[in-house]
Image 1 (cartoon, helix red, strand yellow):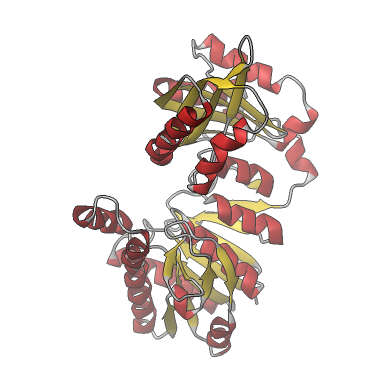
Image 2 (cartoon, one colour):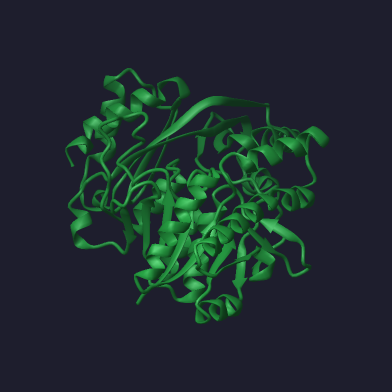
Length: 405
């Protein structure tokens, strides 16, 4: 008998019929002799609807009240799912984040899990009850409701799996697993049977939308296997596990892209100690994540600095940088939102030379100019004009032979 945590995304519970089908799948898993814990997202489109309502009242919604509002989406899905199980003669009990409790910090709309007290869930399991937990939400020490940010239900599921000592965390979505790239852009994309935590972490951080990055961080830290599967078929999906030798034989595992990028450049920045801190500390204080940073030295004691931020944070970051530029005596600040980032990922890169140069050559052969470059041991990322995104993805996928895997 195994203890399995199953998480179902918004499309999997997007209608009453789909909720009933998910209930049948969960019951089938339980009847096979397993203990099952279920984590659910809100029904498809519900979170966006709630955010739209909030913005009709307040263009920039109060973060605390927005969390209270958004958390109602999961409350609906877990209650309906529990009813579907009970209707089939199987006991299920819903738990909101504060009822578990899932304790978080106080960063509203993007809170981080600090602790999970799983005693109530263990008691439910011992009584033969299926615990059904609202994903995406938690509670602060001061008893304020928080949400974990987009994709936060994945993080809830993996964190619960770790807290309960589960054998595996199954993430059910609308695709059959992790693919070599987005099948919507490249129909020849292949499903990956097994991928390392490190590769999945890079893919999640670089635009792949199958798993939320913090869920992969949790899984890697505690060695929790993740099985990414489709809720619409019984086909096996992709296992996200520890790296093994067979993975190193594959040069590139996947191609990702992100159109959620914006670029900011500060011209003629004084080139002296402490200036970078003056620029990036207030950005960090605003909870804005900076990705790529490039510094170009000019003649004299001046430099140009360019960096990328998530597109939703662009306006806030630009305002901060303009204010800082005046304080430090920089000449001007420019911004650009019409960019994207394409990346190749693979643990095999560690032991092979020439991967980056091959990527650059492929892009050049298709007339695609590279604006920024970032590398690590297992990834190469290039910022390009957004209009070339799909072309770049298809070219790289073909150029590295991923359709032949």
